[in-house]
Image (cartoon, rainbow, N blue to C red; front, side, top):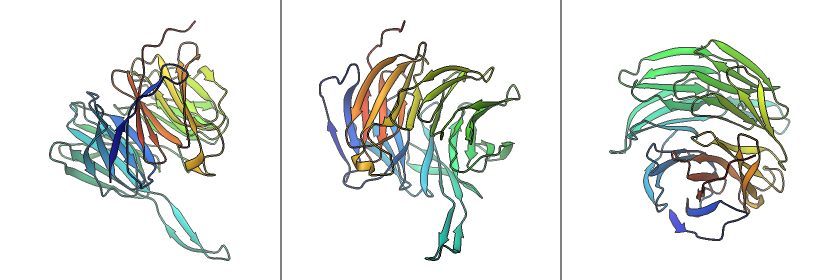
Length: 342
């Protein structure tokens, strides 16, 4: 059962106002990833049950549903004309033990990339990824190119007309890696045991960036000039030099959601405020904060009660922020014009 309700309420602590709420009914499924269509009229969500749903942003109603993906859905990307949707999904590496903690079996990671035609609702192509989950995917638009990045560090470029594969790079990833890939496939970032690495394929440069703690999320500006990494704080990195250019602190716990606005003036974060995420996600509240990138000052905060936020994204015009929750709920928030910082 799918449901939608329009929620209007006073602005909480300034500026963020919920517009509409859509969800999965009584079935709790964790939303892993969210992506707006280029025109902002729809958005796609991918969740742990392997289902992708497309929602109308005007009223929160379900427009289409695409089931049957392998494992969890981790990456989504619209084509520039909004007619196609690429999906990256996969199953994790699982080791089975008996009561004596002896290894009795193992399931290797698997991945899958699907390309959907949004008008007909039919899959155009399915590609199986061996020995790794498909974690990120980007459609490059007019070049008929699709870039994919897997959990075992393989960066590929696919011709969406012929489906010929070109291997671009093999990176060394650690387990449970946070990764980022730009639309053109030239910028790649991933977490390490000491922070993150940023690779600029066009310039043939690679930067080692120190960031303490477990990196939970990464984000880049549309022009690929900045990368943000988040653990229990946020660091901003210049991709031309690999140097840190800013830091945001004061969070109560790890930051699962991270997104730059299209004009790169704002950075949105989402983190739990009252306990570890693994304790009881249905009783953990989250806060969504919007920061000015120029001086890292806080512009807005709203608390989401009893529901962990895992992913966030700005609309193409920057006026709407969407949040995906562990409960399977998706919320849209108005983002009014925010005055410049000092």
